[in-house]
Amino acid sequence: MNEASAVKWYIFLWDVFLCALGSYGGPEAHYGIFSSILVKRRKYITEEVLTEMIGLYALVPGPSSTQTITAIGYYMGGKWLAILTFLVWALPAIIVMAFIGVFFTQIANNDSWQPLLKYLPAAAVGFIIYAAFTLSSKVLKSKGDIILFVVMLILALLFAGISVWIVPILLILGGMTLLLPHLKDQTKTKIRYKPKWYILGIVILLAITNEILNNSISTPVLNLYTSFYRYGYSVIGGGQIVIPLMIQDLVQSQSLISLSDFLAGYAIDQAIPGPLFSFGAFVSARSFAGTGFSFLAGLIGGLSIFLPGILLVFFIFPLWQSSRKMPQMKYFLKGVSITAASLILMTAINQSVALKVDIVVYSVVIVLTGLLLSKKVPAPLLIVLAMIAGFIF
Image (cartoon, rainbow, N blue to C red; front, top):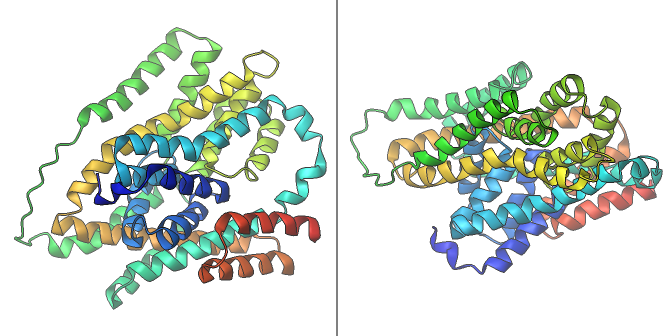
C-alpha cells in the first residue's frame, strides 16, 4: 500500500466515478480521462506511474483500462480499495447495459437518442490525442527515447492490424531494447516480495473447471458464465478485441442473439460511459430476453467477463510494485512506457483518419483537445457538451 493511502476513500471513489462518467470509447480514450482527473487535477499518482501501469496491463489478458484504474485503487489504498474502485468504475455501466438488454425492443425503436451519439466518436478521439500528448511528454526525456518512440510508432502503424499479438510483442520489444544494454549492471536490489501464485492458480483452475463443466453439464446459465469468463482471459487490449470472439461464439455457434441485435447493442454501448466490457451485460441480458431471468443474466455475464482480469490485477500489482525498484526493471518499464505512449499516438492517428470527413466533427476534436490541455473544463462536462452539439448541429 502506498503512502498516498492516507487519502479519504470516498473522495477517491468519487473521482473514480467521475472518470466512469466521462469515459467513452476504448481504453486509449479512458487513459486521457485518468490523466486529466487522477493525475493532473487530483495528483493521486504521477504520469510516470500511470504510463507504467498502462504498459503493464496492455501485456496482461483482460480489460486493460479497467485493470489500470483498479491498480490505481490498489496503489492508493490496498486490496479493498481496489475492489471498491472496480465496482464504482464498472458496475454502473454493467447495470445500465443489462437494463438496455432487457428493454432493448423499446429502446431500438426510439430514435430520440441518436443525436447524442453523433459527436461522441470525435470526443473520444480528442481524449486519445490528449492522452498521447500528455503521456509522450512525460516519458520522452532524451534523444534515445524519441528514437525508440518513433521506431515503435512506425512499427505499430505498419503491423498492429495484422494480429492482436503485435501490441504485446511491441511492448516487450520496447522494454527489452532499453533493458539489454544494462543486463550486466552489478547493482543489486533485494526483492522481498513473493509472487502470490495461488491467485494465478485460481484463474487457471477456474478456466479449466469451467471448460470441464461446460462440456459435461450443458445449462444456459452455466454456458453463459463459462463463455464470458473465457472472453475475460482470452483477449489482450480491451473491449474492441473481444467483439469478434462474441460474434463467433454467441451469434454463430450458440445462436443466443441475432447479429443485428448484437451490432445495435454495440452501437448503443458507445454512448454509455464506462468500460466497453460492460457490453457483456447487454449481450447476456438480450440472450435471455423474455425468460424472467434477463436482468440477472446481464449481471452474471457482465461481472464474469471482468473476473479473470481483476484477479490478475491482484497477482500482477504487488509484483510490479516490488520489481519496479530493481534498476534493471526500471529500464524495462521505461521502454514499455515509451512504447505504450507510441501505441496511443498510433490509435489517435488511426481513429482521426477513420472519422467522418466533416468540419464540425474535426472542430469537436480540436476544441475538446484544446480544452483538455487547458485543464479548465472538467472531462465529464466536455462529454455533455459533445452530446449537446449533436442536437445543435
